[in-house]
Amino acid sequence: MIVPISTVVGLSAALFGIGLFGFLARRNIILMLVSVEVMLNAVNISFAGFSQHFGDTRGQIMALFVIAVAAAEVAVGLGLVIALSRNKPGAGVEDLNRLKW
Image (tube, rainbow, N blue to C red):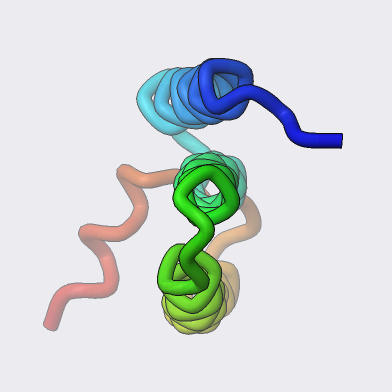
């Protein structure tokens, strides 16, 4: 069954909006990372949808690159959270200033 491209774009836009709201509304670093992951998954859905719509595999290959970038982003983000939690429990964005030299 082929899904119409308008449905794919609508789902992708809704997920991106939810992720953007979550990123802007939260002050916890972990929840902000989760929101960025939701936004990246919205981009992956649109890549896969357009790839299927146009019959080209470049969108699916690009989605794999986005997944790799997301894994690197999570590794850096969790490293920051671990460095932050050594000093104080909790992971607020305002606490990142203490990590400066």
